[in-house]
Length: 283
Image (cartoon, rainbow, N blue to C red; front, side, top):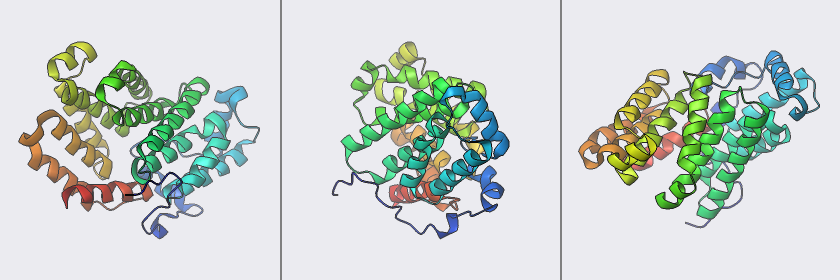
C-alpha cells in the first residue's frame, strides 16, 4: 500500500455523525462514555479559562465553548484535520480534541510508519502542554498515555523499554484514573499496559520490573467493558489482551470479542473506524 502522509479523508459515509446544533449535546454522553470528556458548554469553558490562567486563549467563555463544540463536531464527523487544527489553535484547552484527532487519524489513516510515529509524538507534546496547564483534567493525562502507548507500539519492545516509555504511560494512566475512576478508555489502556509487557517480555520479568500482572489486565478490561459495553474499541482491546496474555489458547474468545466489536453500531467516525478494523481482523 502506498504511503499516505497527508490527512487522508475519512473513508466511510459520515452523514449520520454530523450532530448539528443541539444534537451534539444530546448524544454527548454516548459519544464520550469512553473518555469521560465533559461537554464544553459556557460553564465548562469558563472553568477551563480560569484553570489554565495565562495558557488560556484570549476568548470569552461563550466563544471558547462554541469553538470547542465545533472542533468536537469535526472530530465526530471524521474531519480529523479540522478538529486537530481547531483544537491546536486553542492551546492546552484544545489539546484534548487535537491530540485525539491526530491520534485516531494516525492509528487508522496513516500508512507510513515514520509519519505515524511523528504524529503520535506530536500528540504526546500537546498532551504534555495540557498536563502543565490543566493538571486536574483527567484527559490531559489520558491523551498523553494514549499517544505514548501508540508511539511505543511502533517501536521494538527493547527500544520502547530503553526509552522509559512504559513508566511514563503508567504514570499518566494512574493520574487519569485517580482524577476519573470511571474513565473507561484509561482502564482499557491500563489493561493493555499489563498485557503488552507480559506478552513481550514474559510474566516474571514483566512482573518484577514493571509490576505487570495478568490479573490486573483482566480486571481493567472487565471494568472497561462494564462501563462501555457498546464501545467497539473496548471489545477490540479485550481481544488483544486475551491474545497477548494467552495466545492461541484464547484465540476463539479473542475472535468473539472482535466479532462483537464489528457488530456494534458506531456512534461517530472513530467508532466506525474501530468497527471496520474489527471486521478486517475476522474476515
